[in-house]
Image 1: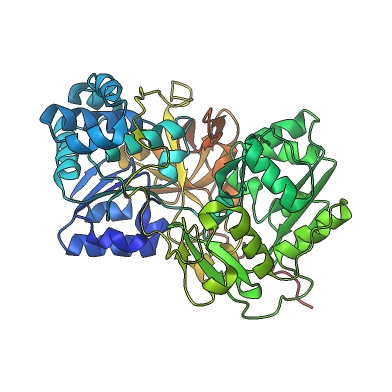
Image 2: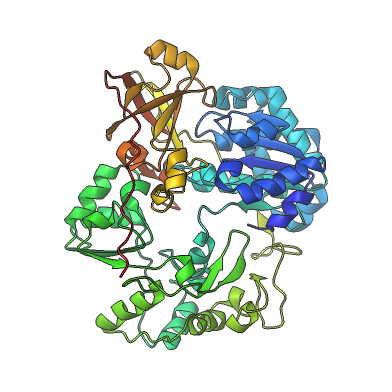
Amino acid sequence: MTNSIDEFQHAECIFIIGSNTSEAHPLIASRILKAKERGATIIVADPRKIHIAHYADIHVRQKLGSDVALINGIMQIIISEGWEAKDYIASRTEQFEQLKEVVSSYTPKKVEEITGVRPEDLRAIAKAYATSKSSSIVYAMGITQHTTGVDNVKSLANLAMLCGRVGVESGGVNPLRGQNNVQGACDMGALPNVYPGYQQVSNEEAAKKFETAWGITLSRQPGLTIMDMFNAALEGKMKGMVIMGENPMISDPDLHHVEEALKTLDFLVVIDIFLTETGKLADVVLPGVSFAEKDGTFTNTERRVQRIRKAIEPLGNARADWQILCDIAKRMGYSMEYSHPSEIQDEIAKLTPSYGGIFYDRLEEQVLQWPCPTREHPGTKFLHKDTFARGKGLFHPIEYKPPAELSDEEYPFQLTTGRTFVHFHTGTMTRTSPSLHAEMTEGYVEINPRDAEQLGVKEGDIVKVTSRRGEIETKVTITSRVGEKVVFIPFHFAEAAANNLTNAAVDPIAKIPEYKVCAVRVEKTSIKREANLDNLRPQREVE
């Protein structure tokens, strides 16, 4: 996030796109609703009528995968009306004329043809966002999980810069991270092309710095993304894998492909706190610990580094992740020696410029937001106040591209996937909770009432949903939350896994799969089934 969570409640306009905020990020949604109480205009662009859309002043339902066209259309109106931040553009940005030329063709009529959004709604969004004194953009995986995910994010950055909303309080472009330490994992180099602090592995100076600190020789070649790893396994190029705190047998697209790849490996290790679907395929499962059983830090979605403190000792044979990784490294010939998380955090501070002042002892008394380059620095509330990291902000003129897979006669529906308010991610933790499980015991498919009538299905019926990659059977929920010829399936449920259906096509730059749109067929079955109230994972063994 370029800005901070508390800034949302002081924004005059908040544009939410590709984020089911109140279900997936309820604490952030509470700040947004406080802003509405203060008179802020809330805009929601989402193909489904999600919960927070009920509080929106403007809600539009763009067609799946049409976000670039929608955003270009908003910018076309802003420029044609002269609402853009002219002084900001002149002093702080580059390539405005190229952007202007590209978006000029995205007239309201053209955008309506692509997105289904009416011209009057498009104009209302443009006016509200551009003319408010402080406007914030909020997005999540509904923007990134497309073959055009990078284009989508760049388009939102274009819109924010066009109106001078970057580098100001209660503005910015704010991605909401899907888990508590996703931001921290990325910051610490859990990406194939960077070291901690987004220092490129191909950068000679950065590589030498880490070689000196760690006493080893490092490759200058980027590693593989998750999807590339599975493909490498199938090609026989990758023989072993360690999967820590991840459950790709539920969370990754085209699960048959994932399963085949994992079974091809010579050796698979899984580190987790429960025996997941992925863990069941492992040669060795090492028990990790929960947040309550370890010391260390998390970095949350607003770049805030927070201390976590051990509340109880690890149960059974469970051990902290860093200890497990150190022991694996030693057995592979590298002496990775740390006695406490404080030593790791202090090494981070010494090697990572954006964390340069975030030493462990400082975190005992305060939380700090990076960039925090020195011990004396108070941390940074919002980014790019006076200048961008590259100097001037760069507009990226982007043309709309359709999704990788469109509906057709054989597969007439478009499927999108996501989360629910009850369960989290692959259900590894929430589906072991009896109270949460009782709230939502099984998966379902949302179908528009008109489509349900044509299919001859009623609420609670079982249908078969089929894509080019697989099929599942699940119960029907009839709702106008989805439009005609669109269906939604939550991905938490192993017994009706949405990712048996999803497309493994990826964004060419970020390599993120297109979870949010693929073509499916829906068919009524004769099956009748009661909800399975006993579908709980076994608790881990405790000595």
